[in-house]
Image 1: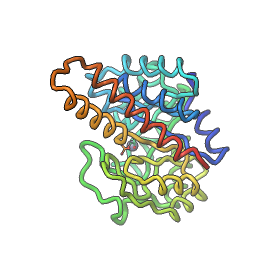
Image 2: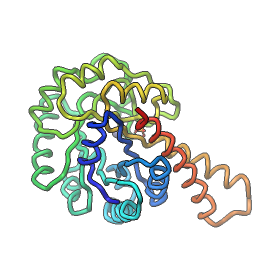
Image 3: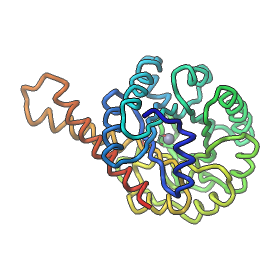
Length: 283
Ligand code: G3H
Ligand code: ZN
C-alpha cells in the first residue's frame, strides 16, 4: 500500500526500530524494493533523488508515478520520498508528483544560509502537506561533492547546533553527519555512537542516517539502538545490480534481451533490500 513517510517514520520511532529508505533509479529498483520489503514483512521508503531525476532528463513524473504504482500494489506499506533536493523548481514539483515527503539539502552552505534556505523550504513543504527532512553537517560523497573526510573536524553534526537548527527551521527530521559517507562501495565506515546518543537527546525530531551502504551490519544495528530512525541506502542496491548484470552477460555471450540481465539485477537488489531491512528493523 502507498503510505506516507511521516506515518512510517513516526511508527518506527515509537517502536524503537529503524525505517529503511532505498534509492530508486529505475522501475526495477522500485520493484526490487517492494519485493525485498515484502520478504522482510516490513515497511520501507522508496526515494528518488534529484540526481536520479536529472538522469531521466529532468522529468520526475514517469519514475514517481511508476514507484507510486508499485507501492500501491505492495502488501507492505511503502512511502514515496524526494531525496537530496537543492533545486527550488524540483522542490515545488514534489506535491503534484505524488511524493509525501522531501529532503532539502542545503548542507553545503554555511550555517546561517543553511538555516535560512531550509526554513523557507520547510515552510513551503508544510503548506503543501509534505513531511520535511534537512541536513546539518556534511555527510559528503555525492556526485559533485568535494572530497571530504567523514572523520575530519567540523564535518560532524554538533548537538547544540543541531538543536538550534531544528528549532529555527521547523524540520520534521534531521540528517546528521556521524561518520558515514555517501557512495562507499565497501562497508567499512565506523560511526560515532556516543555522538548519535547526544544528538538523540538534543534533537526532538527523528534522526536520519545517510550513506548507510558503507556501514557494516553491526554498526547499523547499534546506530538504530542509539537513536537513528530513517536509514538511507542507495549504493548497496547498485552494487548488487551491477554484479548481477556482469554475471548475466558473462554467463551467456549471446544474450541480447535486456530482461535477462534486469531480472537477475532485480532479484539481487531484492535480496539486498531484505538483508538491510532485517538489520535495521530487528530490535
Ligand atoms: O540519500 C541517500 C543515501 O544517503 C544513500 O547513500 O548510496 O551511500 O547508501 P548510499
Ligand atoms: Zn543521502
